[in-house]
Amino acid sequence: MALQCGIVGLPNVGKSTLFNCLSNAKAQAANFPFCTIEPNVGVITVPDERLVELARIDNPKKVIPTTIEIVDIAGLVKGASKGEGLGNKFLANIRNTDAIIHVLRCFDNGNITHVDGTVDPVRDKEIIDTELMLKDLETIDNRLSKIQKQAQTGGDKTAKRQYEILVQYKEALESGKAARTVALDKEEKKFLSDFNLLTDKPVLYVCNVDEASAATGNAYVDAVREAIKDENAELLIVAAATEADIAELESYEEREVFLSDLGLSESGVSRLIKAAYRLLDLQTYFTTGPDESRAWTFTKGMKAPQTAGIIHTDFERGFIRAEVIKYADYVSLGSEKACREAGKIAIEGKDYVVEDGDIMHFLFNV
Image (cartoon, rainbow, N blue to C red; front, side):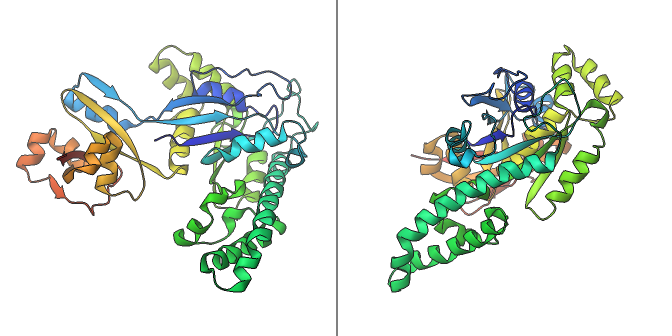
C-alpha cells in the first residue's frame, strides 16, 4: 500500500538527519536553509517483533517485513503560503502525503544556525501551522464561492452539506485551529475528501532533542506538549544526532548497549516508524509457513476480501473464505498443525473484519 508520511519542519531542525537514519536514501544534511529541495522518498521497513517470532517458529526460506514510505520535504519559511522560499512547491509536496511528521528543534547548539536566530519550538510550530492554515483557507474560500449558490437554492443536498462543513472548517481555521480539530464523523469527512486540506492530515510532532534529553525530554518538549494538548496529535522524543551515531554501530549488541546507557529500551527511529504506521491508521496481518513468513499492511477496519486483495486481486475477486489463527495461539501452540488440532483455526467469511496480528490463509476460486 503506497501510503506516505511527509517529514516537515523549518530549515535546520534535523529533518534530513532523521530521514537519513530512517532510510538508506541519503538526503544532504547541511548547515544552511534549503539543503533539501526535491523531496527524497525512502521506503522504510516497519520493525515488528511478531514477524521475528513467527520466523523463529517456522524457520522459513524468506522473511519479508512490511514497509511504509517517508518523504523528506524541503524546509518551510514564513510566507510560504504566499510563495516565499520554496513555498508553493513545499505545500504541494505536503498535499501529496497522507500524514505529517512535524520535526521541531528542541535542543541548543551554537554551531547549528536557526533560521529565526533563537530556539523556540512552539514558535516554529506556529509558523508552519499558520502557513498551512492560510493555504487551507485559500482552498476553502475558493470552494465556498463555487458551491454557495448551489447550496442556497436547496436542490443539491450534497452541495448544501459540503457548504455547511466548509463553514465549520473556515471558522476553526480563522480562530487558529487546524481542520482536524473539527469533529466530523466518517460519513461527513467523505463529503470533503477530495479537498485534501493540509491541516486535516494526521500529525506526529517529533521533538528533536540532545542526547542528554533522549529519555525524558526537556523544557522545550514540555512547552510543545502543552501547546498541542488540545490537538488530535501524538508527540515523540527523538535525538536525531544520537540516532545517526547508533546507525553507524555495526552489531545489534553494540546498539543495545548504547541504548541502555541512554536509558532507552528501543531506538527513536524504531519508535518513530511504528508511530508513523499508526498515524496512517495501518495494521498488519501475517502469512507464514516453511517457504515464507511475511507481514502485510492493511488499513484498520478492512474486511477479509479486501485484505486478500492486497496479496493479489484474484484473491479478492474469487474470495471464498479465510482461515484465521490468532497470533497468541500460534506462538503458544508452536505451529499451524497444532493450532488446527486444538481447534484454534477460525473459518471466516466476507464480513470478517481483520484484526491486527491475525495469521491468514485465504481460499479463493476464479
